[in-house]
Image (cartoon, rainbow, N blue to C red; front, side, top):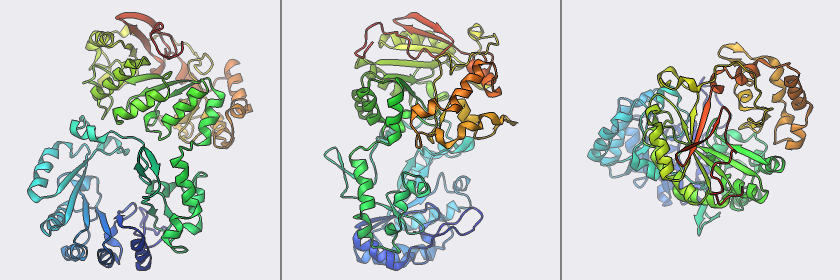
Length: 550
């Protein structure tokens, strides 16, 4: 829609959507959304004329507007150009607050434009992304929105907001209920539980490239998306109808419709008999292919353990995941009694996730309650053990040392390891190879956390582990058997066995180090059944009380 600029205001290749291209789009689509991934629709010099064209053709238009640099007369002209347009104004907080996130925005001016649009009878929404600085003003915003006759959209965004912006209180329950997610590709419509391709709402980049959605725009150089960057898919070279019905996009949509799974998913299950899915930088439930991956693992008799802390999927999604593979072990991270967990698990709905855990156990599956001990929940451990027993759940009381001082427990100091013993978890069976979000196969997650950054707490990480960044260790380029039997992995393990130990490994796998100071007590039926300083992930606890294989 609009030419984009980088933060130094240098032009990035591309340009404004022309009237000719707009005519083509409005001839084909009955509805169009104009937003500003790298700018704002109001800056397109043809914007008002484009609205007139869409109105004459009876094309619905939705406009997302966050910039405030246009005068009131411009907005009045725009509102008159398409009286049926839907305007969404991005004002994150009360008008005087919004600049905290929307840099350089005059929220009060934009608020006046929103009021004007409402007074002129347009369909108007106030988009209010919730951050720490505005979360206590929501009730006031609801009141104001009613007074001026606009719809208030409270948006609990999943984006990485940084410590300053991340909300600190629990999400509103009514928003959480509606906010549970499932994999529903927005580029396709959904009819009769099958994803069809009648309704496609593609994204037009600033270079006029037509792609399935805005999220792919920054990934066009990835191997799996390179084909979408073909010049035939550009509005400068082809009509929108020919592009959407062309071979490239048709093939892309067909893959999604048919549940096509990336090749690397099969590579992993072909090699390992046990796989742990956890979220170093996310949560396994957000992988759009997770349910299909669970089915693949079941077909290959591969044991799967899933660590789940996020609570943003609906119960029907969990039901489908449980049914896809009843042999999966689910470990639910609810740190404290369900109503307390959000204190550490920011934005988690612990009470809802506890209901999910109960549902998992009712199906006869291995459902485990992982309870990290902190200051705020250390007095409720016996209550939690009792609650677990009432619901036939295994509970793992995990005395970890991975907390800030304000969260540090004040009791049970005897639960923590005091000895300084080097015990490489990658060799003793307690920590398996780690696959990064980019597909790189590494000895463990700690290598991923430090080696690419080159520094740990201000100190340079030794170069010897840089070999693990070699592209031949990526599952996109190689299979697991070749990777695990490569010289790089073999030499790494040999060095550890021969006491030529990297400093990173000494830090992370000595029992005196912070994250390895753990003591895990597993309870079932009110009884302590295992005590370990390692992950009890595959220790049998339910004593045959499972539908899953033993």
